[in-house]
Length: 140
Ligand code: DAT
Ligand code: MG
Image (cartoon, rainbow, N blue to C red; front, side, top):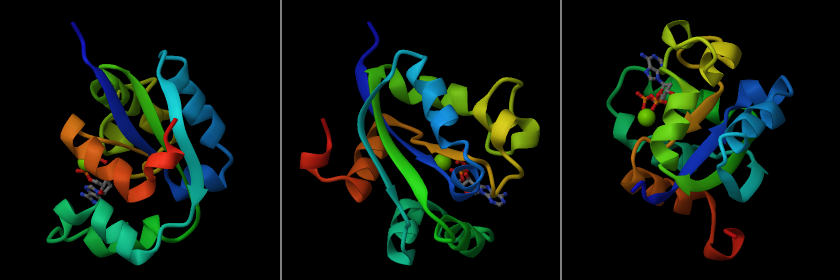
């Protein structure tokens, strides 16, 4: 049996700017995953640093934080059976050039920084990430 899971998806600044947010979210809905929370926001530095704290010592950290705070994003919580792995599969590899054909990053990503979308990498990470963006009353 596959467990009911929740995952945080972020439609990143370049995809929002290009008007691809609804199409990206729609692809995930079409997998049978349910939207249980959704908002548009501009991340501030503190939020971006917390969301990506695991990468704090990486050479790309400052560029990543600068990019994620550069313009508004759309944050979505999806719920469904096996949601975490199914979303990761639909999102594709971190580098769009290496992502499988038909994945969101292959279709919408520009490069390893501007890769269109974030999806939580585990159930535990998802639960941490969700609470960075949403309060209990914002999740349905
Ligand atoms: P993912 O988003 O696929 O989980 P990750 O957790 O390794 O990938 O990295 C988080 C984000 O950091 C990624 O979406 C984009 C950025 N990033 C990762 N590796 C990078 C690199 N080598 N150069 C620039 N940005 C990178
Ligand atoms: Mg990751």
